[in-house]
Length: 130
Length: 364
Ligand code: FES
Image (cartoon, rainbow over all chains, first blue to last red):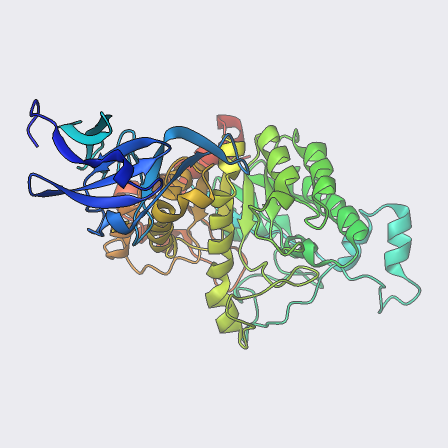
């Protein structure tokens, strides 16, 4: 999607179910949209690894660790995990969580305006190998 | 310059090690019947090589075990092949994890280590020593590491026969990891310890082997398991300075394992979020492998491409495994290493791992 384009109206925020991903169309182009803790995240619906449909994946908290044996939640934004091989992509920056040098996920800006979900400009290549 | 990372020094006879035990243990072990000592220093190993375990061209000292005479090792190995340093890894002492009595195992490790200091390290500066530790009781292993860590030519801590039923990266071994890291000593993990601990763990992953050939071929399974365990338990996150040498496992299994492990990490990192980078990166930074038994027949063999693809040229170290039947000859083996990294394998990688200063690296 070219930058500086008018935001595209996708759906009502209330149509999205907390913790779930749906695949919508923006100008005929498919986009995955997930709702997590009251915020919306839009991303390329195709996994950059081997092409699995991310709409079948899961939104989960991003886990990190302060050291062996410790589990922490590392950011407000969730990860989407791929329904095939479980790769995780951070939905705040598109990074492949396990390995930043690996292919990341293309994100799109998404906001809630007046109760409507609006798809904005592309954030740009978020991670290597896009 | 050549560094040989796996030379098995032995005691000449069982009674010799008794002399290094405390008087009480010595009296107990001697027992009332000389033919039936109440504790054996050699846990039984169920497999026998049909040709015997040792190279048959070696001189066997009168009434003594192969590999027990430092003068012969110098003559038949160090001088003959111009080896500058030999890392002594032990023979009977490798299997101390198979001793049923944990207190005797502690005493025996002390005895083996003192024997090594006195009989080997003090006789020739080319010899470098590995500490035998009572794997059964990690806290006691720490005491032994700390007792010896400042000895001039002691450069490694050995883990082999596994008595605790967990691969060596498990936190049950954390005291040993910590002590080795604090002492600046690498941990050596020697092949063929699986199933030799007491109580015995599994020898092979799919079940008990029937043949020595099966056992010998499958021993890399144990090495794989220990390697994966070190990475996934985050041992190198906990101890960033720690290094581990996988000895007598060869290198052939490593590139394939790392492909699988890296791929699994991509999808399963969530289970071990303390691992902060792909496993192969930890391996390149922390783990070394000895060449023997090198099964690659030539320097031009395509296998070496997988070593380069995995970036492991800096992690491979030459070893003979003297005096065993599957020993490698320096001349023949080194000619099978690609010229681009032969020097690294021949000595540089070992010198880096064991921090061989000019003093340690030079012959007597
Ligand atoms: S296709 Fe998505 S992780 Fe493999």
